[in-house]
Amino acid sequence: MAKKRAKVPRLPEGEIEILEMLWRESAVTIHGAQQALGQPIGYTTVQTRLNRLVDKGLVARTKTRPAQYSAAVTPAEVRERDLETLVERVSSGRVVPLVAHLINRKGVTPEEIAELKALIEQAEHKTTKPKGGKR
Amino acid sequence: MAKKRAKVPRLPEGEIEILEMLWRESAVTIHGAQQALGQPIGYTTVQTRLNRLVDKGLVARTKTRPAQYSAAVTPAEVRERDLETLVERVSSGRVVPLVAHLINRKGVTPEEIAELKALIEQAEHKTTKPKGGKR
DNA sequence: TGCGAATTACGACACTTGTCGTAATACTGC
DNA sequence: GCAGTATTACGACAAGTGTCGTAATTCGCA
Image (cartoon, rainbow over all chains, first blue to last red; front, side, top):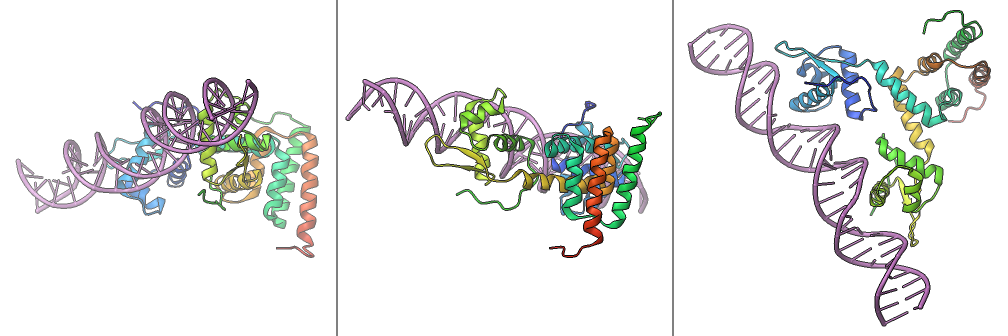
C-alpha cells in the first residue's frame, strides 16, 4: 500500500513538474497528463512517473476505469518548503534582504509599488495591534 | 577535460550542500572539506562528490599537491537561479504575491517594516524617474 | 460472446548521486 | 634510494529518476 507521506521533502525538479501540471489540471487521465505536460514524452513514461508519485503518496489515483490522477499535496505544502529553504539560503532566514533582492532584480512597476505599500500597510496594522489575527 | 558550464541548472540538494561549504571555507583540501561538512561522511565520498562537481565545472581544483578545492560559481549565480525558479513557481513570476506570502508567513517586526518601507521608497524613485536607467 | 481497442501492469535500461574500497602515485625523512 | 605515509585515481554498488517497450487485462459493442 502506498504510504501516506505527511512531510514533503524537497522534491526533484521532475516531480514538481508533474505536480504543477496536476495543480493546474486538477484531475487527469494519463492521456490528459501527457497532453498537459506539453512535452514530447512517451505515454508510458508519463504513466510511470505518475504512478511513482502515487507510490510516494504525493498523487492520488481513482479506481475508475480510465484512472484519474490528482495531486495529493497542496501547492502550499510544497512551495512552503521551497520557500523556507530559499529564504534560508539567500538571507539566512531574513525576509528583508530577500525582498530587496526581489525588487532590485528586475525592477517593479509603479502598480507593484502601490501594492507593496498596501501590503506593508496591512502588516503594520497586524503588528501594531495584533488583536486577533487568524493564524 | 572538464567542460566549462556557463549556465547553472537547478542543482541537487547535495551539490548545493557542497557548494555552500565551499563558499564558507573559500578553499579547502579534501580533509578540510570533510571537516567542514561536519557530517560523518567517508573521505573518498567527499573526494568523489567534490571531483564530480569539478567535472561539471562548478568547482575548481588546484594542481598543487594537496589539491585545494574552491567554488567556481558564485552564490549569486546559484541563488539567482533558485530565486527565479521559485518566483515563477509561487506566483508565475509576479513579485508582489511572493512578498505577500513572505510577510504573512511568519510576520515581520516593526523594524523590518521600516526597512521594507525604505526599500519601496527607493524603488519608487528609481521607477518614477528612470533618468538614465542602464540596461 | 468474442474481438479489437483502450488501459494498466511490469520490467528494462541508462544516468545521476551518495557511499565506499582499493589500487596507483607522489612525497618526505632517513 | 627507499620505506612508509599522504593523496589521488578508479571503479563498484545501491537507490532514485527519466525513458520506454511489451505483456496482461478490461471494456464497449457488434
